Length: 267
Image 1: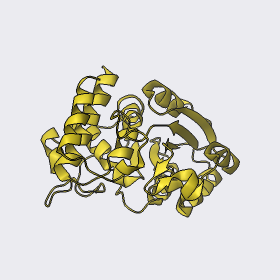
Image 2: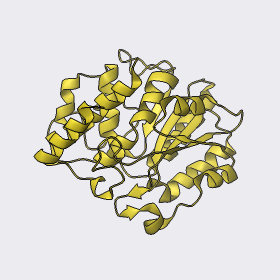
Image 3: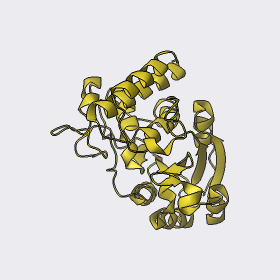
């Protein structure tokens, strides 16, 4: 499979969805595309669009739930629902809500909403697997701005305490949040050092390198949860959105949409 082409198609879907809705979060959605491709096409086991509740499947949680356009695009590519549904994002009656809803959308394992909750729920899912002696793994994408939430650190502490080596956190480290650069709003410091201090196995990769993300996910350390710091570019793939905090939660107008789609067409 041509993963670079797939990443471009998913980015086009994201732009089309947010433009059609005239609402949504393009910046952070664009930055996690390769991370999602690594998980859904290379890492996660026993995921089946025909049986989305398969008990032995690996679980995925998008803790930074506002970036669900990227997740929806990947789920549609995998066949969980028709791609035609994507343009109904955030529309009345659509199953594609502004934050993912596991009761409405096939393939969604956890609702997205208040930041930090997905990290804690992921630790709970991983602990449940241990109690059931099940061998599925739990993968959680968290945001760097989200990591200012105390829930993230409670989850980090408990996951290390319970030796949840079936749990993986992937940090979308794009350096920006809704109000500006993380370091100006509330510095998160050295995230790798912090998670290592909490007792996690830690790795840093280029978050736009699918093979590097997948390899880091597979590099397990017995008895330790895994933290992967994925260095990314907010708005990746669209020149005027890249590293521009203005596109955290803004939909493009007609001219901006056409420019973005033209850029993606030549990728």
